[in-house]
Image 1 (tube, rainbow, N blue to C red):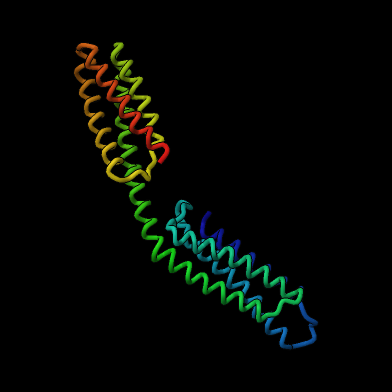
Image 2 (image 1 turned 180 degrees about the vertical axis):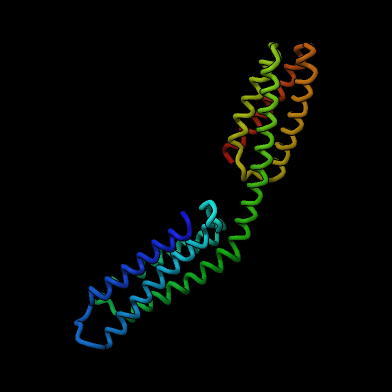
Amino acid sequence: MKPGWILGVGALFCTAVAVLSRIWLPYTDSGVSYDVYHHLAATAGVIVSMMLFFGYTAMGFPESDGAPALESYGSLVTATFLGLSALVTTGFFVWTYWGLSYQLFWGVQILQFVILGVIWTVSTKAVAPMAAVREGNAKVVGIRKQGVIDSLRDASSACQQIDSDSAKTLKKGIDKLQDELKFFPNHATGAEAVEIMYELNNLIQEINDAVKTTLKDDQPKVLVDELSLKINATQRHVAQWRRV
């Protein structure tokens, strides 16, 4: 959704609140009074609360492709709280029509902004950096995984072009490993994940060498069988990460 649409919807809601609050009055319209000022102030509070939510949400969407620009954990938490705050503020504002004191209404607003400050500080200063590191590591692993999958796909295509039983056997193992690798979690990090990537890269090199020499020269089937065993072993190592 584009920012203009979000701001337009927000403006529509704010206008509706402003109009309805002037049509439906919680007091007798007999001139300026104590209740008039409080009602106008509470109406402004609801409108500001809505503007904060829709404005902050619109900031997260660029004009170009509509994809979220603010993807950090802190931004998500802040936007969610602002949305809930707008709902709570609106609910308490409606409650004033049934006798809720305006002092309690403003007390709730102050409490919400205090909580928002605490949440924003914790989420952006403490949790967000850790989440950013995890997201960065996941992106790196995802790129490396996709590179390995592409290499396996190329090797499988090369085997398909060779008319021999050895090539068919090898292709079957490569395809299984490729399918298993799609389930390898991007958040997998640490020494074991690095070791698996290293193992996969070495295996791809052996597969490429076999495609160029062993399969074309029709060398002994034992070499292909050994490579198939390595592929199956690597597939089992990758499958262990499904439960991570």
